[in-house]
Amino acid sequence: MKYSLRMDSARLKRVALIALLFTFAAHAFCFFNLTYSGSAVMLDASSGRSAQIAGGQYLQPLYWRLRGNVAVPLFVGLLSALYLALTVYIAAALLRLKQTVALALLSGVMIANAAVTSLCAGSLHTADAAFLAMLLAAMAAACLRLRFGALPGALLVCAALALDASAGSFFAALALISLMVDLTAQCSPKAWCTGSGRMLLALLTGCVLHAAGYRLMLARNGLEPAASLQSDALSDAWLTPMRTLLEPLTAYASLNVVLRVLLAVLLIALLAASARALGPRRAALLALCLLLLPLACNLPALRAGSAPQITPAYCLLDACAVALFFHLPAAKARLRRLAAGAFGVLLLGSIVFSNQVYLKKNLEFESTLSLMTRVIARAEEMEGYSPGYTPVALIGTPEDSVFSVERKGFEHLSALDAAANHYAVADDADMTWYIWQVLGYPFGLVSTFELEQLKANAQVQAMPAFPAEGCCAFVGDTLVIKLSSY
Image (tube, rainbow, N blue to C red):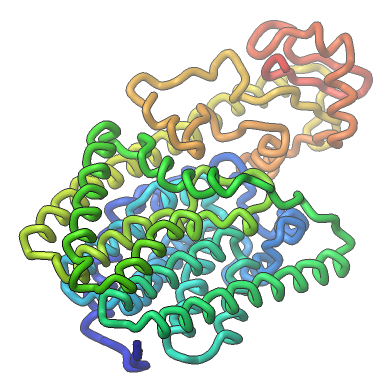
């Protein structure tokens, strides 16, 4: 199938407006409030340079130089809105969607989803880099469709992987859906096989280039790999995206399952009704693509360390359904309206859910600030304590303290990993960055080695946790503040 290089200005304007509306409705609260938590309390993203390179995201330090090291919520939001809108536009062009309803549904499923919410709620300091990786992956898929050849696409895949590890799956899934749309438009099986070969060549070449760059960056910076590649079974990798979409990552948990099952049944019926018009070969290839799509969204070879709960590639399962509802020969206007109504309810649930998540993150941030202000006041009451000079060891975290309780009415939000905690800091590393970059208080924190030694100290183990009397005590020259048991 031939694609044009001409810019469709009318489609771009509609996508830009609709994408902006979805971004504002679903994520504006995050971009206009302080919702930092977890690793995001490292406000200066460049502070994690070594970990980023060791984890394979070796282009992130370069990106911070261009964007600015400090993650300013509003600026991150503006960049995210730009990257997401351009990604949706490229996806709409690849999937040949022009109707306003189709563009609205595609924008919604790619922007107002749990994956984008998870990135913004849990990793705001690096979220825009992940969205830029999505854009580069979409551009790589477009390069293949515009007949630029596999090498430009491979270079873009490499750059996307060097920003976010899930970008390879996003590229593979989007390119596969584009080939599926071709099959609905009289594409020959031979042309489909050629397109599939180009996609695989670009993906494999991009992975090889990324691996070479990764080894080079490790050697140049004297680092070791952060984690080995996972070896999950293909069956688990195939089932995970579909299982995740049925989880309660929405405000309407039960209704979400019902509507997704309904959409799946409608899509299967539509495929069966379109089989004769497609012909046996194209129908068989389309069915094969549908079976491969969940695996493409969750390629095991591209995931290192612990896999995230949900990645942006998962939303392309919904994008595929939208494309097929508007392209299969048997699709009728009534069926499209029914599918659009079902997706509309799903998107409303996602928008409500994301705003609830961001409110919870903002409350966590405020609660952490309140508690740590009291901790500092207690430290300053200790005779012999001098800010900036006395070594300090913070044992435990607010998350593990007696104050860590679920807010009534917010229980359902814990289904999303990024919103599962009750305070903005969950481990010792988070606590260090919180003290340094959020509070900006001159605690002379001890090293990780000294902290572990103090945790094993009998005197420290016998200390009560904050706010009990005796939760602050000197062990040698070090002021130990015990926030929780461990």
